[in-house]
Figure 1: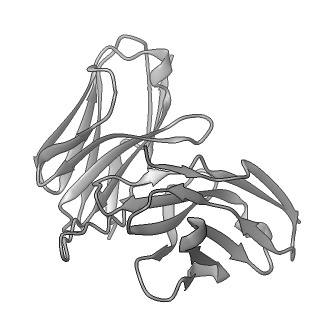
Figure 2: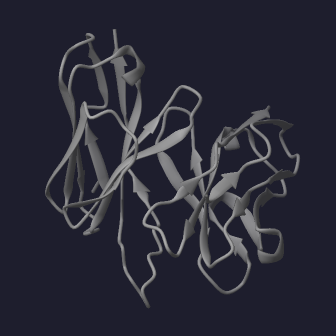
Figure 3: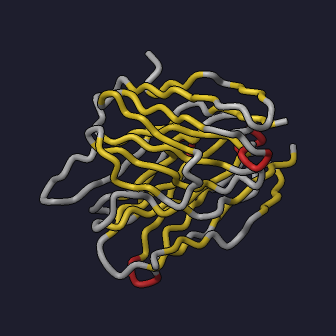
Length: 118
Length: 113
């Protein structure tokens, strides 16, 4: 029944490793997002995909690479992890229902993945 | 650039006190407005939203917000808070020209029992 799910919930790893976080939504939405939330709770958009195409790519290191195999999935792969990557990563989705050319953008969030880099 | 400002980073209240959290945005066009809540250790959940119509919107758990277009504001209110309202509250704005929400920095609300 979970609308937006993420795995794993917790991820503890060493500097320099490569890791992936998976996200799936069963809401039938066509737009998915990755956010990073730092220790001060500030939310930063990282990427957004609409119908499997990248539409937002904020200034994030190219060690972060999103992959969207289909509309229901948006995975995040991180290479060469650094201490500063420690944060909670949230996946979200929305239906970009364009009524008269407008996107309402109500987003539904996953439970988050707490990444700790040692 | 569009921005969202939440005036108070930390708010501490006693139970039964009234709450008002400020949110102002900078965008002159049509907007959709949201308040999200994040309880400790949990994900963000939608509290309430404004798309159009009555500028006073009611959300879950007794929260309401008023959209004042002339002031570019969307303040969150609750007449009597409970200990369980302790959480982080985020205001977000969707400008009709964007694909992304613009987020405020959040307000940490602590309710003393």
